[in-house]
Length: 86
Figure 1 (cartoon, rainbow, N blue to C red):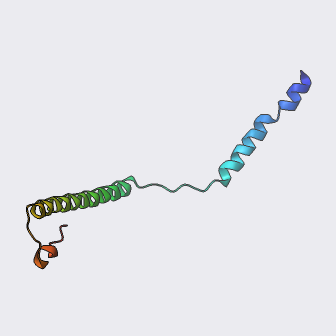
Figure 2: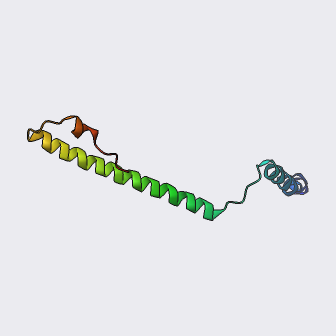
């Protein structure tokens, strides 16, 4: 029993030293500014919503063009100019 205690007696110190060495080896963390992160996410969300609206408008225009084409309308150069929707 004494031999077992003697062999394991230093385990807690060794474990503590090992954990400290690992902790010291990790990169230091930076303080995260939540307000900046949330603002950046909000801007990205707004941009994605604008792009989605533009895509939806484009599909609507393409649907109208397809209907016109199927009804026999012929497109000219002015029809193909279109307007960029943003």
